[in-house]
Image: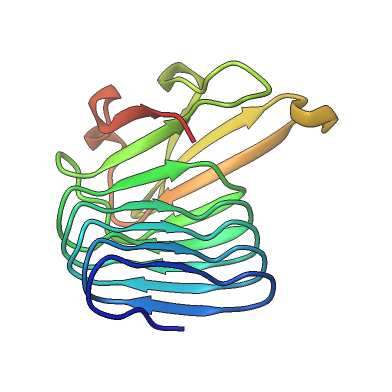
Length: 165
């Protein structure tokens, strides 16, 4: 599904979807399934929802949320915000000092804070791990975000911002 000129909202619905909109400030929702969302030069919001998704945005100040599942995210140029919200995500182009990692405020528990994170260097990549205990009557679950090509010494509390879904 492709959007046109101007600002669009595209929603994939259930199933595996490909959404593309390269003009305007757009909102792309993958919804359920393994989706591919691609945006261009505007200030876009990409939300993969459930499934193993690919989210790629271009120039502009974008917000990317893989949702649940194992997702691949690229923010492109601009000041991008990547939401820390899923099972295991890989962020391929995090730019330290420019991009931000969003700590989601949860409805069912206390907000996630910088002190809740375990920041670990694994080879050339940085892993950010955190555990959420018993949300929605589910046992604890460990989440992981991988920042490709980033060193642990580069990451500080200034790279994070609190986000309300």
